[in-house]
Image 1 (cartoon, rainbow, N blue to C red):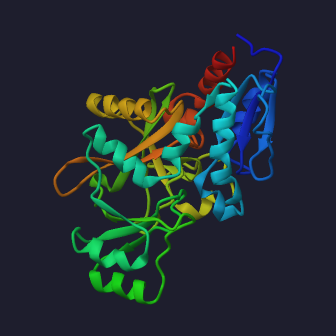
Image 2: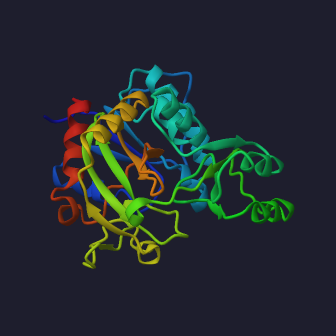
Image 3: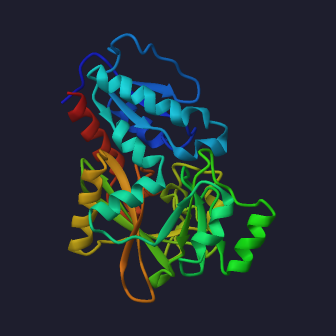
Length: 319
């Protein structure tokens, strides 16, 4: 099935993450438009008609690359498109979860799913009081984040107090942050489950150094047995991450929970991350990603190309 005469819009910000998607669209000769989120405009008083489909790929970590101006702008744009009747992939509701880790925790709680304990703060002075009700070690992370931005681990209250006194806490671009318990990961890895159309697509285990919170799967350098991966995205960043990945099939109950999260968050395509607490074996969900960067060299890691399935989905939705 082919889209109608209007193109599919790919709304993106990162210069490298979407090259595999563009390549698959080009290979199939599917009409599409590259829409740069960093410099854009729209008329809120008219009906948007120019696109058959609008694929939102805006990243909350854009502010690390000088694109922070587009983050909150995107929400208004998505609402305008939806009011115009445009089919938006990862629309306004999904993006609201993408740009609020606090809101993600609220959703998980409403679904009866466990997450690491956390408090939400809007000033650094509240961090020590929040920490007194939590278990160390803990991390402080910006509410609007991504790619591990602004995440710092603290092993004691004294460490945190010194950071507050020296004004080193990063509350991010909305002045809000989470003080959250750090979970020792069983097997020294987290698991990321990708979904498409609200359904399970694949999962990977991601192994990283203890002080690296950037777990972007497109940045992975090698498999767990040491085989170097061909990196189709983030080629400059990947050698610095030290990430190792392996394909993995989660338990049935985890897949069901992930699909429940994706559907409740209105994710058309997205990744859910969880960790198994090495202290007691509990499965804790902690991140809902409305921007899925598929694992590097996916055919080698998981046995198929997820970008082909993604384009199948986009074409069907555009039709």
